[in-house]
Image (tube, rainbow, N blue to C red):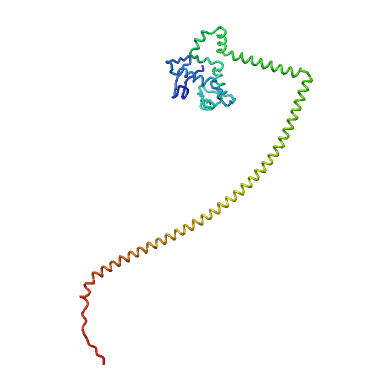
Length: 299
């Protein structure tokens, strides 16, 4: 028996926070609570996933068949400002895929009475016999087949009337319509032929345009590459000159530093000599002998 095992709601109407509710019984399930506790929104969330609510918000529909060979699946519907998205076991699917899956499981859109809303029981007791009969047809799922049968019969009647008029109408009227159709086809063929020639001319001009653009782009690319090559050469030369000047400046700086050291050493030596001179000067007069008088005769 197919049944809902778990319901997870988040950011839907009054359920702002995450609600994770399980397990559900395979039989009947009753949700009770005080007024304003969120019972209606809880069932509304289930109907939102399983029914056709907000279907007009979809921008497009894809048609495909989905084959499910697992015992349990997770169905999710997410609503946005422009469209809503369905996912089955964390895989994106179309709305028609979900409808086919739910109908195969017994959750038909034409029979939404797998959820008994508040007040439905009282409304059932107040119904007329004809209304109860229609409700039973809807619950049993037979009304949708009656509607489809009536629709099919209507289409068959319209198609039969069309073929009857087409094959058994007046011959003159048929021939006139056929001739009118042939004139329309000839006119349309001429228009298509003219459009074909215009398209050929456009394609030829477009090829020329693309060829000119390619030539222009090629020349611009060559000029740009040449400019880049020249700038690269100039940059390399400037870099070499700057490196050479830096090396020369470094040598001059080293020479200046050596001269400064020599000058400093010379100043230190001069101060040392001056100090020694000042220390020796008082002793020098005592060490020098007094000169003796003499007479020199020359014959």
